Image (cartoon, rainbow, N blue to C red; front, side):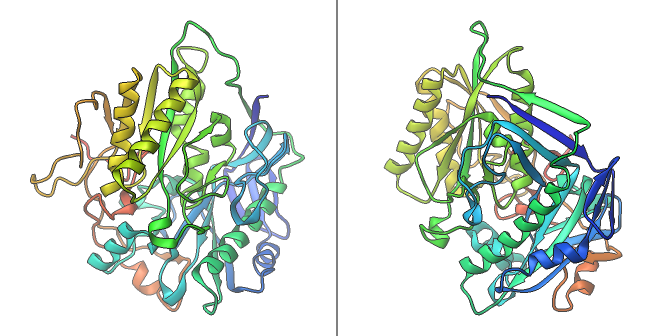
Length: 430
C-alpha cells in the first residue's frame, strides 16, 4: 500500500481564537494549546510563542523540532511508540502535514541543565566552553540550521524538579506531542493543495537496488537500558539488532526524538524516493544502532546490517552516522561488511575539525571507503545580538540576546552537525 502525503504549506503564522489553516495562513489558539500542555500534573511551567524567518530572534533550550502530522487513513500515528503512543506500523495510507512549520520543544532538565546534555559529546562541549549550543537563530549569519527557514512555534515547557529525569522528559515531550497533534488535527478534514504519493512496492528488474543505512546512537551508556530519551525507532531507544524499515515509514515519523523534523524530512530518503523506478529501486532503510560495546558486538551489528541489505537485493548502499568519536567505528565496520558481500557503498559524513592542520578529516579510514561525500566542516559564528529571545527562563533572556561566540570543532559541537546534507551549518566553501 502506498503512502500519500498531503501538504498544507504555512506561509504566514499568527495567533487567534482558534487553531486553523486557510490559504497558507496558520492561526493558532495560544490559550487553548497552553491548556493542553498543562494537562499533566507534572508540568509546572508552560508557554507558547511564535516566530517567522528573518526575525531578529533566537530560540533557546531546544530539545526537539517536530512537524505536525496526522494520519487520515492507513492506521498508526505519527511519531509512533514514544511517550506511550501506538506502535502500529506507519508508512501507508494518507498522512496530512503542515509544511514549512516547526514545533520547537524548549525545555529544561534537573538542576537547570538541558536534557540534551545527557550525551557525552554535549556534556563535553558544556564542560569545555561553559555555554550551551541548543539554540536556533532566525536571521542574519547565525541562521544556519534548517529550522531557521521555518515558521516556528516555540513551546516552552518544564516539569517538576522533584521527579526523575526520565519522568521529566516523558512529561515535557508528551505535552509537546499533544500540541503537535492538536495543530495537525486542524487539517485532517481539509483537501491538501499539494499531494505526493510514494510506493516502493513495485520494482523495475533492470534497475540497481539501493538501500539507505542510517546509523543512530543508542543511549544505554549514559541513561540505562530502559531510557525513553534519545533518538527512537517506534519508541525504542536501546541498542538492538538492525531495523529494516520501508522508506515510507521514515517519512511517516517512525524515527523521531531529538531531531524529529530532520528524520521525517530526510533529504536522502526524499531524493531516493524521487528516483525510485526511474534510475534505481529504493529497497528500504536499515537503522543500525551504535553503542559503546566491544568489538564483537560492533562487528555483529555491522554484519547484520550488511546481510539485511543483501537479502533486500541491494547493489549499493548509502550509509550515514549521527555521532562522532568512538561510534564512528561502527559505521566503518558497516561499510566493510557491505563491501565484503559485494555491495558498493557511499559514505555521507561531515568532516572533523582540522585542528589547524594537525588532524585528519575522518577519525577512521579503511581501503573499503572508496566513495565518500562530505557535508562539510568548519566553524560557525560569532552569532550577532538579537532583539528577541524565545524560550528564556530564570532571567536568562538578556544574556542570550547578546552576541554569542563562535563554535569550532566537530566533536561535541552539535550546533554544527549536518549528517544528511541539509546545508549550511557545517559547510565551508573553497
